[in-house]
Image (cartoon, rainbow over all chains, first blue to last red; front, side, top):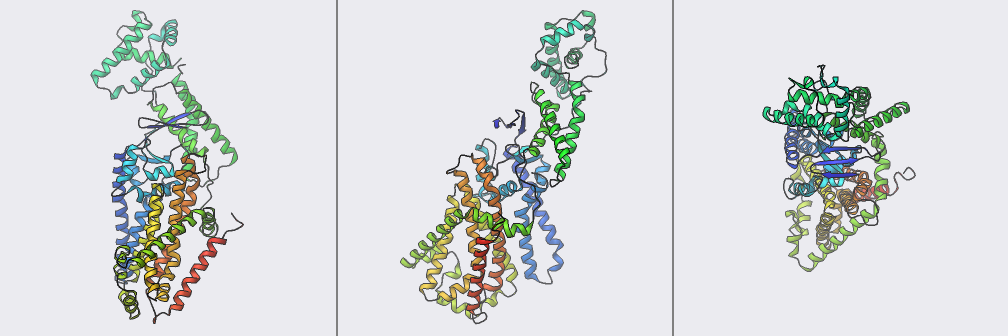
Length: 253
Length: 329
């Protein structure tokens, strides 16, 4: 089952597992298309340059080969690169986009061929005007070729392995010394708030200094109001360290 | 429930890494056949990662861990749910079996394309027969604007010499133009078939107008000798493009089907690709014949030879599309 919310395509597998694919915007797709036009033009020009020594042998056949090379590169460039690179042309690769099946299934070569063969319809009347209009009004941002092929273009997110070392260091946790209070804290904090706390810690380096102070001040204040710890356990603890200690209690039971 | 995240990552990491390695291997070599034991392990790792992702459900949406697991699960899901076989492409099998079988499976769309073209032919012939001035509107080619007698006289006096030294380029231009027309006829199927119908009908109008003009002037032999050698493959190729376009339109509209649009399109996609690829092949041949053969006329090349060659092509193409690959479908 696929649903759409904002610019996210959500796919639910028959087993009930949900994963989300962030859709690419029409503007990014257009930029990728421009890059691909430049690259394919460059490839065709390089091949014809390579064949230039044949020109004196027969100008006629050299002109024919040149025309056919430009035509073939123009027609096949996106198809071949998307098949070889599993949904990516060089332009898409540079801009971190990828064509995927709209239901999360494995892409067939026929899907990639169809979405590229239907470009003449998308290009009507000039430079992808029809395809662009359709993709703006279509909820998955699909152009006509994508609708026919059952594909969507998504943004490829960096998926580095999660690391918790920066959040839960080997520092002494004064709150953990009070087992019964720590247990009460675990009982009182909802999973949603716990996840927000973890997110705040994971992203703390990306926050403006003032916002960082305010956010951790608010979180620490809330946790303190829920389960007060003895003063010797919290004195000289900055709000951020307090929240980090709370998170460690929550996520390292 | 709040999970012990550090322990969760520590316990899951070896499985996630194994799954990632298997996925990378599969993605780098899509043709590889996974042994049964490895398939079972892959399935088990997928289930583990899916379960881990499900446990992350209550967490905020953009955590690295969730993004990482979503990426793993979505890639593995795609590999698990693959619907088509991954057999290697075999050109000879494709030519001998896949193409003619796909054509016959979707022959109704081809018949409709033929009917639309014939309707266009009748319209074109009727228009030129009723109003001679219609020729200027219907025929966009300057060399067809004069009378057939003038054209035949020019051709037989050796106009083909004009193409000396240009035949290769001429063939290339013809191939490109005709392949573009066929692909456009197919692509316009996305306009619910309206664009495809217009392209087929208009091609028929031009063909009908030219045919009427030459036949009514008594130059039917010249007409057949001129058109048949390349037309025997070029016209069917454009009809194949129309067939593919009508298939797209039918899948979009979905008459008589309970499947959703996506399923309908997915079912018809491989045949569309096969048919349009067949059309492109025919058009490469047609371009060569038109440039190197069709432009020669009597007395250089007797009309009987040209007509015989065109008829032979047409018969072979008909036999191929009608009978090739039978019993191996």
